[in-house]
Length: 543
Image (tube, rainbow, N blue to C red; front, side, top):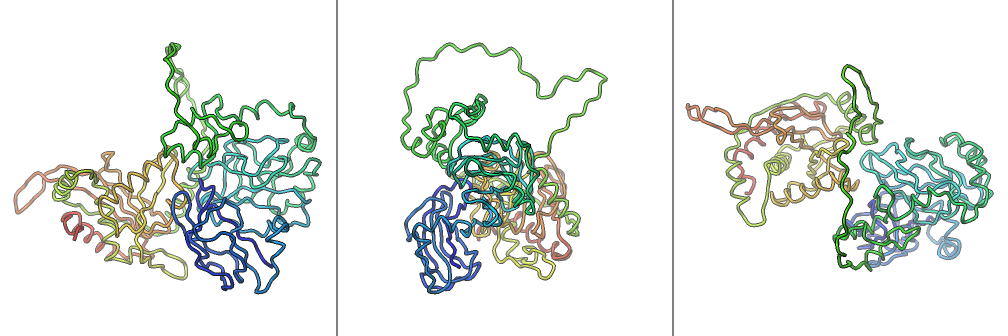
């Protein structure tokens, strides 16, 4: 049976895509995993692979043309199959068979169309990152009984990496909320039900109960969802929640509008939204014109005091505060525990003479528009050492050891809620200045919670640096599926022996944590010797 492949959402801010190149032609055989096309998003040009097998029967978007997410990209089916219904009015009925993007979202329909009334859609907890296994509803932007249009923001969902807006792919009434604000649930649990007035929500929930749906909400909620509402009966809190700016100062705008405003240096708080309930959309940014500043009005005096972050505790009294773990903290805990207790770690430490590195860095940074850090030099040295010691650039699987012939170095970055690891792709092919610029850019995105899932996946080796905090030596837990991680300490001025004389030196300790399943002790030691040689003679990294 033919299936419709839609324009995928390949980034969290993507609203439309451009087909840069088709790698299959109409009539070609397509296997699951084949690359169908290269698609240009708002951030990168990415390969899009097929999740279906068959013959490419139709191309809906030609090379060089753009289309919104969920537009018909292609149709795959059996040779000679009649697809006229999919190309015409029957396309809507084919929606349950449409392509679902690989990792960025899961706006799933009901599991069995025959059991769900026509026009009713069961929305499940989406997978918004490649490592996401459960999500937390940070806030609902729609209430039961509200009208929902395709593209409206239903809720803000906290993943293991960021808090992201989740759009509806359906139109109708919000009949049921399955996961309340602050609650967590696994990917694919029932998040909401959207459909027409009068729907028997209890029956819909019963039909998907075997798929892990939560218990039904109180009957009063279902009755509220089923009962038609007069326009003036909408809850006051819904109006507040969907306004352009809430009392707390949060601005509601589409992801594309946010990115355009950031690129143009526009303050979203000054933009009047023309979207639903004042939401800022693309056209508002395109049409925005900076107003001349008005004369400054007298401002009220600031309060003499602000409330402390922690409540006052009288002397001698004990107090314990429970703070709910974020999705990021829970994921960090789970993944590090899995790594520590499944991969047999061992640690190797060496001390590096950084005198030449310090001199080289001074010369490099004296050049116009050039700025590199010692960490950039470590990352570059690691990338080059990995090419000479491919055993360290591996991943363990039960049946095989995967040798990564490419080098993607992850750089650990501390953020407010924990730790993220943005990845420098093909690090060995980058210059020191390129590494420095990209690390700065990715670290800034990480701290502003603007990293995309694609920017945090695919590492083959990781560097963690605590030297800027004065830490001289430490060990790290391997960032699986990597086989090793390098812990970098501070550069310390100390007495050293050179040519039989005690002189002032500058040294730095680095510790390599290795997975003994893939990297033997001698291999790890040889890698560190090569790394040490590069850092002590930086000119060799430029050869």
